[in-house]
Image (cartoon, helix red, strand yellow):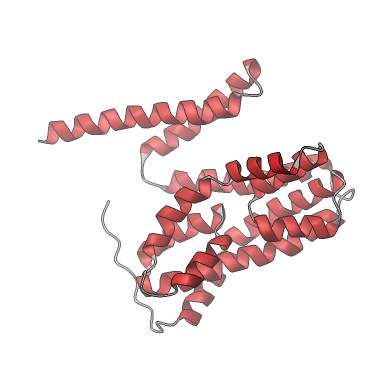
Length: 248
């Protein structure tokens, strides 16, 4: 891969970068996230949650998988401590996202605020920022991230409310289909990365998930995701090692 040359913008200001991030969010990830939140709002209404609690979950969790786990377990009457632990486990993916994204923002500026702005991190905003950060100067990256993340967070609130209030007006299969828009967008974004192993892992993981589900329905996601993904990574690692040895 050839290194990308960062684009120099005429106005090196936080406000300028913020607006660029907001514009980029409206052109893609914000509406993908909105679709998922509409589905979540309808799901929360069907589970018997009131609107204020549903909006509170969106505001403070801002992570669709964790929100779904929260509502499902709460509707089943599971203890709050267990719900909190389960939601924390679903959020572990944000650790790797944070460790790969935030080091690309200059550390000598916005130290406190950038730790607080981690709350705006989501699969959709992370994907776009990882794609766009190499194209823009380092001084603009924090404002760009805040603009994108804040826009996605703000659009999630009316989307959740709309899904909640429209329950009964939309067929259930559409409601549950909307929940998969955001993770599907995240999954397909990896097909743009010029690494063949990513595409192989997606294809074989998807096929394996369907086949394993027929035998072990409760464990198919873990086996196909972790097992097949690890296997593809290991095979790709061995192939790359051999290629490097052959070039020496």
